[in-house]
Image 1 (cartoon, rainbow, N blue to C red):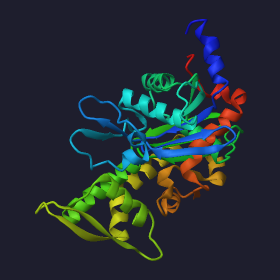
Image 2 (cartoon, helix red, strand yellow):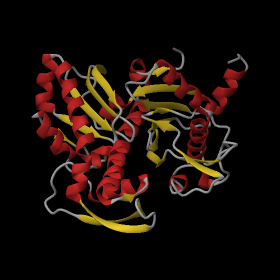
Image 3 (tube, helix red, strand yellow):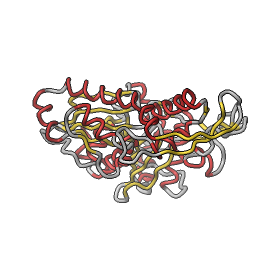
Image 4 (cartoon, rainbow, N blue to C red):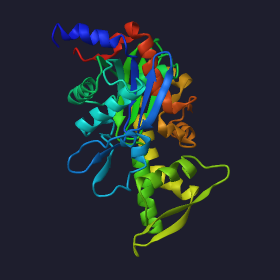
Length: 353
């Protein structure tokens, strides 16, 4: 950046609002300092096939674009540019970020905000640079990266900067982030490529195998959020599902129960539990002693699966809990980092590195 450009960027920054972004595989949430969560939309972009150009108008990104998944004509594609928490399509991610940044600033495209972005703990140096460059090209003046579990821990007010251990499990769309935190850093951490997407895929496979019914990912997600669970319900549920018969090829409907969907979800739930156990086994004894009292904090969209806390607690033998509003925990944490940036700057990954 030239010496002439820096003052101009700083001037534009005076008219911008600093933002914290939870750039997720399934959803992107934006938190603005002093205003809280102001945007929560699916990480989906509609583009023209062949050219790759984003569709014009408000239907190109977010909620409207997600509604197109599995329903687009040949000249349009609905793309999810992030896979397993990292960027799979650099150009589309940049355009998506530009849309969100501009939307926060009421359509002003020339703004230059300071941005904190939450990323998976398993992200590589190359993937970090991809996130930073995408945000910079989308209009960010300064970009910081923060690990998702740390942001989540701050967001739910865990004592992550104290000399006490906290265990955060962030079950997102593409990954499950697991980290033991203390003194403002990660003691032990991992990124498991199992999350909401794998749960949806398990439901799709179950419907094909047990009901000979082909369904899309949006239908699978509806089943998961309506009757899905990781622990027995007091009153088991059922729902009607529509799709295409895998034998006749014709549309039809079938009735599924919460019992069979819980069985379909048991494998991804088991994988998450096993990975948490592995992290606990790698934790220092003093930290493990702290976790007996503090338990496991479960956040992210997967925390909304009924009984996930009970399933994890039963598997591990220690308490587990879902804090209020777990879906926005990471984004809220980025907002706190923005408010106390000078304090937390040492725990961020800057674009200066």
